[in-house]
Image (cartoon, rainbow, N blue to C red):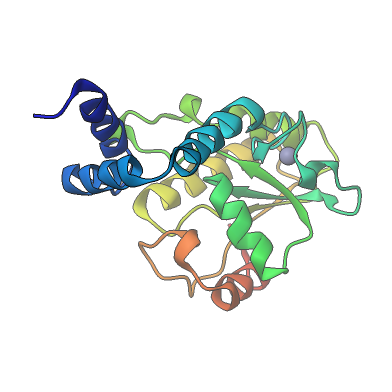
Length: 199
Ligand SMILES: [Zn+2]
C-alpha cells in the first residue's frame, strides 16, 4: 500500500511497546511531514543512546561508562543493596530520597511461562556480589506482581542459603498489588522502603 521505505518505518514503529498499527501509521506520517532536522534528531538520539549507553559492570543499571553514577558515588552505602527489575525502577526509588545504598538491576522478573528463568536474569551476579562480602542488607524491591513476588521469593531463598548472615528485606505492603513500581507515587514507595520487613 505504501512505498517500501514508508512501510518499513511503519513496521519498525509498530514494534514499540504500546504502539499499534494505526498509531505507527500516524507517527510515520508525522515524521514525513516534519522537517529533515526534526526527524533526523530522533534518529540521531536513538543512534547515540545505542552507541553510548550500556550496562554498569557492577549493578547492571544503565550507564554511559563502565560504572554507573550510583556505583561510582563514594557517599552511597555499599553495604546496602536494593534489588529491582528494571533501570526505570532505580529512577522511581531515587525519587523517594529514602534510599542511600546501591542497586542491583535484574533485567526483568522470573516468568517460566514466558521462558524467563533464573539464568536469564542477573541473579548469579547478585549472589556473587553479596558473597564477596561487605554487604549488610539486601532490600528486594521487585514489583508487587505475580512474577515480581516469585522473583523475590527465589532470591530470598538463594541468599538465605548462600549468605545467612546478610539481612534480606522486602518492601512493605501498601504498594498497589499487581502494579509496577514505576506507577507508585513517591510517598507510597518511600513509605514502603522505610517500612521494609525481613523475609
Ligand atoms: Zn552501577
